[in-house]
Amino acid sequence: MAFMTCHIFSHVLSSNITFNISLPTPTSGDRVNYETLAHDFGYDQGLPVVYLLHGMFGDADSWVRFSNVDRYAQDRHLCAVMCSAGNNFYQNMADGPAMETFFTKELPAYICSLFPVSQKREDTFIAGFSMGGYGALHLALKAPERYSKAASMSGALDLPELVRESRQETRPSPFHWNAIFGNKENLEGSGSDLFAQMALCQEKGCIPDLFITCGREDFLYDMNLKARDRMISMGLNPVFTEGPGGHDWTYWDTHIQEVMDWLLQDRIRKQSAVIMG
Image (cartoon, rainbow, N blue to C red; front, side):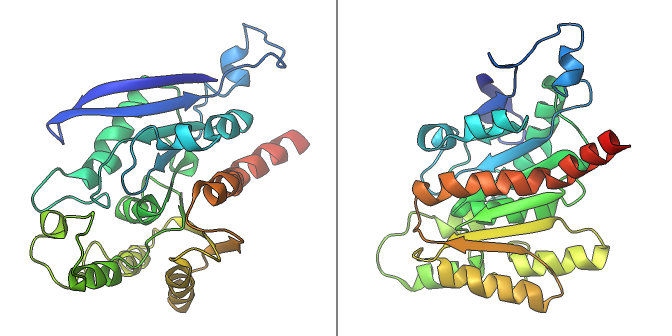
């Protein structure tokens, strides 16, 4: 596995930003033929790539500090990109940086130009936990022509409800809602409402495959169940899994493996069909 921490200047954000990238490479157990290395590891064809989003108070290091995501990606010959974002729900902020544009346009363009990753939609994925779970679906629905699959783990999937409840609370919020959304009190039907985004993608006839997982002891479990049911009522067919666990890395480290297997199942199926002739 090759692991790199990169610092780049973002023209969209007008600032420097940090991301980590994990690239599968031969291990001690692999037979290496240097004449066919690029082909055997998929460098020639382009590696499948997943953009992994962090949650509240997280950064580019969250995934590698608290999970074994590097090893899981290596085992599956999958490239993983992890980038700092801040506490902004991956939005183009009313008074702040355009994080949505950065993640859907600038960052993928940069990754594709410098690293041996596939530029095909069928090989490009996005996933995240908590705030990043919402972010993964939000960004995929904003750019369905880029992402073929999106996965949320313990995601805050009903952002209008979350913002409404948070604005009514008297205790300080970790999210600066006015900076993110301006003075909007109701986000339902807006470009930040996942269900409005899904309806728009349905109208256009292009929508990513969606995966949702959440622990039964998670404080967002009921929100995830309601989101699943609402998607089904819209005629969508999200994959939904659950299990024992709360809003923590014990659950996410286990289920990111399930997510990765789901992301790659179509690619594996096609490769098997080619081998079988």
